Image (cartoon, rainbow, N blue to C red):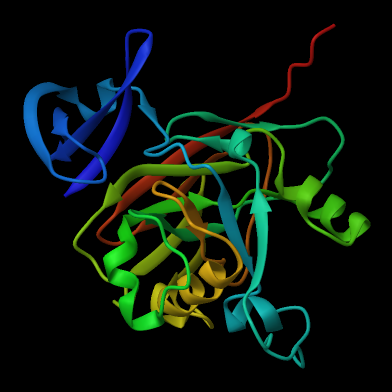
Length: 259
């Protein structure tokens, strides 16, 4: 099942994506959903982020090739490196990524996103499947120069629109599967790996995070990016595709600040 959230007039609605068509969904996002009437072809529907989380937990330094691409002797972290991104940074597939005034180097980071399906606290690794609603594509957009300047990541990764998520939540897949993750900029492959190469896999991440904070239904964990996150420029189209989930697509536009 592929669950989407879409714009319907002045409101938003939950839908199901099947064979390129969006259908209204009936039921509870965190319970049972059934297919309703057809809304239209996917390309004619305005998608939103598939969830509105209370928090977005991101993971740094979670692929060995990314860890060592600039520092071959870098040692694997003893535990997952977690940080928070504001919900205001979230947009859906098809929305613009706004390149803000100030940063001079902004990167795309293709990542697997985990969507929590029920309240999770002190969850053991072997239990995590009971707490996961599904998986989505995500992009941990990062102002790299600010990241290095600040020595921490909140400003660099917290700008509005810096957390695209979508196009859908895919259920019925396993994060332990060797699913191919690809990041393309203007159609050119710039990042590629498989999600089974995470240093800390999804079970370990949920066990670790839920010891620190309660994960609520709809919360999102962005699991880290592989090597060679590409630099973006205004006018670029960035695609994050994960096998079995879909393609998250966003265009980069210049910030238009109020005069």
